[in-house]
Each structure stands twice: as structure tokens, then as C-alpha cells.
Length: 333
Image (cartoon, rainbow, N blue to C red; front, side, top):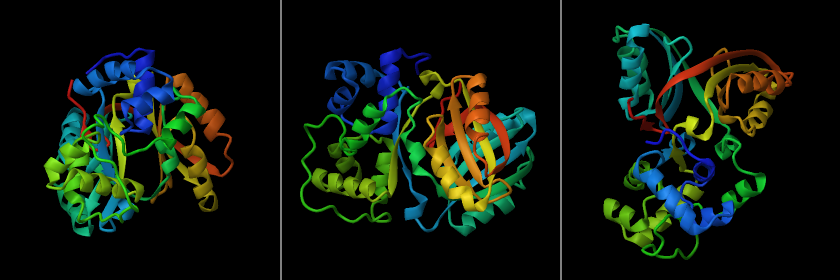
């Protein structure tokens, strides 16, 4: 993995956060670069693991899934072990070590009430390193935050990427064209395809066909249905410090219920907010914020959050170490 990126690499990476399956040609057009430059820059970033493409299930389309945010207090000398254990679970989406090094935040997509009860009533109580925890169900994720690009792209570039075909991926030559009306999404029947996309969100349709037993044409149609039906969300994973974001934090906000939806939508569109969700619990809005430094975090708190009248309390918890993002464990250092 790289320890730094230059300006062009950062812009390409930011574009792939917005359009994870965009073709090299599309990226070149949207960023006003040559296709050769995009291939030469982006290819090695995927090859060495700096960029990783994946897909994340949308709990709204999987009624049995329970999206849960956990805040886990641990013994400080065991916090990394607990974080690594959580990161190895297939049902965790992100795992971060917070604050003073004795707290972990994790998002889980649990397969039903039995899985939830097993975690909360058996697994966590049986873990000696865990002192306490609180659980918060995600009631609604505000998708506007999924356009986050670390402020590296203009509004025009972002619009062009959104308008581009989200299904395209390189190499295009082996992939047949799609035709006909869109097929309906079938989350349960498409489980092998979702698993293949989770392993490589940029896999070509020939590769997806080989992994799932489908024909390339059927694979393309089913991916089309999954994405357009919002069954899965394509994602690009990378260390945000490579984009110039050296301060990350989770904000737990208490918002007046009547203003929760509007506040979540407004903050979800902010260029410093990479994730926003309404939750159960004393704080009812969770934000993940990524900024250049602590001064920028202070400015966001005072100028952006502070300007919203219906917010009564704010708890800010800095992220110290990330063990997992978008369902992909981070390499240990």
C-alpha cells in the first residue's frame, strides 16, 4: 500500500469513491485526463491494494438484516485485539478504535434477531476484555453522503461521474452489451453474485460469470438490477489520509425529532461528512467526518453543526485506528 499520493492520484481515487465501477475512459472524460494517464495511475493502485473495490448490501432490501451500531468499552491493553476480532467477523461493516484508546465503534449487519441476541447476550458478555457496550439500531442511512470525495472534485466533475454508467468496469472488450428492459432485483437469488461483487466490485462480467455459473450477459443484467434496484452499494476502500484527511471523528448528535430528517439530509450533503445515519438511543444522528486536521474539525463543529438550531447536544469521538471499512479489513501495520 502507498504511503502518499500525488494530486492526480488523489483525484482519480476520489472519482472512484463516487463511481467505483467507472471505466478508465469515463474517468478520463470526467477528470479531463487522458485515458492512458488514468490506466497508468489507477491500475497500480488496485494492484498494490491501495484501492480496493467492493459492494455492501443495503439493509432496506434485506428485511431480515438488522443494522446495528455498537460502542464497546474495552481494557486499553486489549482494545486492538477486540477490534481485530470484530474485524474478522463477516457481519461487521466498519470497525474503528476511538477516543482515548479504550472504545471501539462498529457497524454490523446482523442476520436477524437470533444473531443480534447472540452477539449482545452471549458473545459480548463472555469477552473478558469488554467492560461495557451500548447498541444503536440504524433507522435510516442518508445516501447523500455517498457522494463524498474529500473535496477534491468540482461540482461539474461530480455530476459527470454520477451521470456516467455505474455498471461499466474495465476491461470492457469481453463484456457483452445489455439490452431490453431492466430486470427486477432478487436479493436472495443473487447471493452468489453479491458475494462476488463484495470480493471485487470492479470484476468484469466474464469474471463474475465464471464465479457464479451465469453467462456474461446474464451477469451484466443481474448486476444492473442489483445496482439500479439499490440492493447493493458499490464502494471503493482506501486510507483517507492518502486524500489529505488526517483527522477523522464520529459525531453523536441529539436532534429534535421533527428536524431529524432535514438535519440528516443537510449534513449528509456536507463535503466533510462521509456517512450519516439516524439511530436509536440518546443521540439520534450519527455522522462520520473526515477533514484535513483538527482545526478543520473545530471549524466544522462551530460553523456547520453550531449553525443548526435544532441540535441540542454533540459528542465528538476522534478515530484513532481503523480496523475495517466497507466490509474490508485493513492490513495490520
